[in-house]
Image 1 (cartoon, one colour):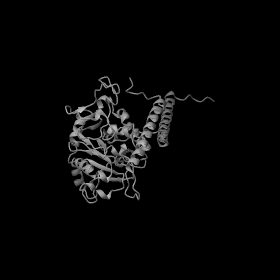
Image 2 (cartoon, one colour; image 1 turned 90 degrees about the horizontal axis):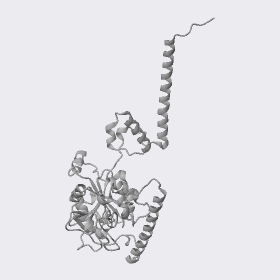
Image 3 (cartoon, helix red, strand yellow; image 1 turned 180 degrees about the horizontal axis):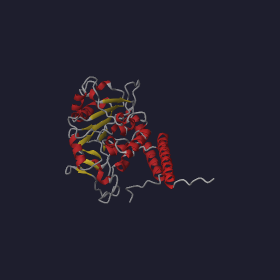
Image 4 (cartoon, helix red, strand yellow; image 1 turned 90 degrees about the vertical axis):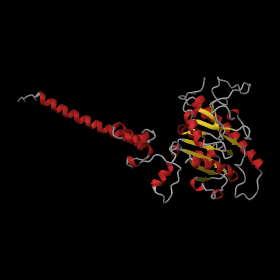
Length: 382
């Protein structure tokens, strides 16, 4: 008995329904696969920024944000509560939030942090520096290497600064552990200074105005050649005729600095005693700091790689806002708990030997990294 052939139109409808069901199943499987990959560590590691919050309406941005949440471990949180950054502003226990905001926005053209490793013997210098920065509503963080925090309590501004204590550690050790770029992202500029600087002729706000107007990413204030007692490099000496200088000229065979020079010590370079970094530059510099090489020797020669462009243009020494380098070595002196006096000369000799050894290690690591990273190209190699 022959059955009548199915109507062609009915067959087409059934086929279409089956196709739609299969397509829906494939989309569901694909979505689950993406989620699984994200939770397994394959999601994008791109940092979440506040600008992302303005794009939640689009599906692509929503998927991207879910991937970021997986990468940062915030899967269990609603997106609006995620706070990716922090700062060093101290919050009073009882002051209203409106009063706090009013104080912080008093002079809010730039946000900046001054961070220094300090000892009580340099309290006069540090007092002068801290007051100048706090008067501009900039944050101050002091790293106490000698164990004496209470000795600073009598200063009027002491409670406005952040104090961190670790015995006999350098500013580079502190910076690597307490100035992570995610915490520093709230600041436009980071001042990572030594404690033996005279700032009578220095104004931090005018300094940053110049830094911004000149398009600089890494800078240092020039050194007064008449009053400074410890000047190691010509490029750091103040030029009284200019506001900023980016290079020096020296025809001695040992230097040979000219307009054709493209790198340190002739151009694109600042010293490690008083560097100032933009937010973008600091994000790079923090990763350049080696966790176990605490004296930072060799870093200055490579800072130009973090200048966010041509180091001959983005790195400079600001002459109109200058400081005095007093060259007072205090780190490594007797601690408060020392029972026996120690000879400072011997200690400084040991520190210098350690610094030289670390310099050799840093150079070795840099050269090895260059050899092993086949995808990296030196942007300054002619």
